Length: 83
Image (cartoon, rainbow, N blue to C red; front, top):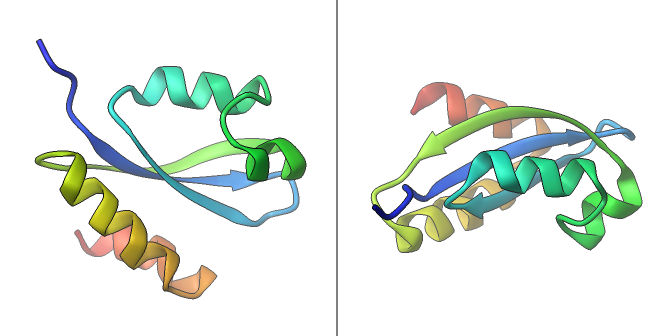
């Protein structure tokens, strides 16, 4: 069975946010925590997962990721809360 795609928001050690997409949240967060998920999180340090939104497919997840990345830091959490 294919895993469901999602968009996620995590917080780094410097309190910045990182937005990404995955079809395996547990594995992706584990990779971030081990410093293997992305260069950005590797450099900033993983702190915690903040939000996850399930999507119908990878395309939708990527569209949401792009939209979230256009928002200010304060509006990113609101985007997930409003969904």
